[in-house]
Length: 175
Image (cartoon, rainbow, N blue to C red):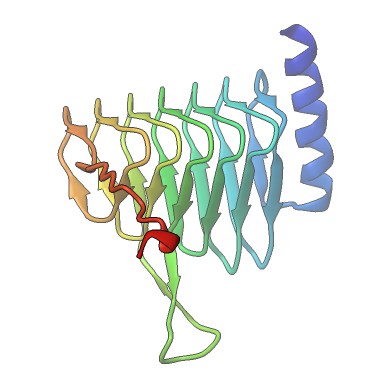
C-alpha cells in the first residue's frame, strides 16, 4: 500500500512535468493514464485511487476534477472538453465511461459540450455510461451497466430496467 502511494505520487509528478495543467494532492494511488492538452486542467483530490487501465483526459480547455477519497476502477475512460466534476467519497466501478461532449454532426470537427456533475458519496457500478449534461445528486447508487443522461436527485437508486429475451433458434435444415 505504501509503495503504491509513493509510486503513484512520483508518477503524478512526472506527468505534471509533461502536462502543466495537472494539479494533485499527495497521498494518492495513481496507476492509470492521464492526458491534459490545449490549456486544460486536471485536479485530483487527496487520497484518490485510480487503478491501472483507467484513462483520464482533458482537452481544449476542459476541466476534469476528482474530489477527495475518490476510487476509479480499471478500464474507466473519462474525457472532458468542458467540465467533469466528481464529488468526494465517490466510488466508480470498472469500465465506466464519462463524456461531457458529443460530436456535432452538422458542424464537422466541432463538439456539443455540457458539464457533467457527480455529487458526493455516489456509488457507480461497473460498465456505466454517463453522457454530457448529466447531474447525479449526492448519496446515490447507480446500477451496473446503466446509461445516464439528465438530472437525477440525491438519495436515489438509479438503474435501467433490462429484459433478457431468449428465443430458440430454428435449424435452417429443418425448414
